[in-house]
Image (cartoon, rainbow, N blue to C red; front, side):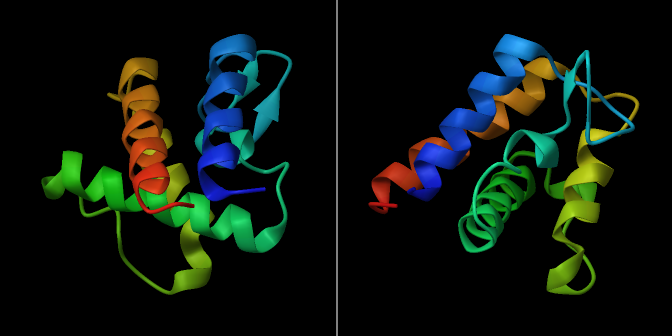
Length: 106
């Protein structure tokens, strides 16, 4: 599965089931990391990295890219769980990451 497909499937999960904060998934929906969790580890990492790039571009003041590469889920959770975050902002990050992955043939 391509990175763009994983991101598109994750976005669709958020739209269909709902977006949540504070946990991976629940009956009410998924967080950003949970939404892309159904893919293999390499594609999931590429998808998460694509989301983080777009978060940095859209919120440069947020300092969401820090620490070791293995902390990707923590970085996404920090962004996702920000009390001021909205579902619309999360979906916008997915939209930009999907477009970028498609432009790069991934």
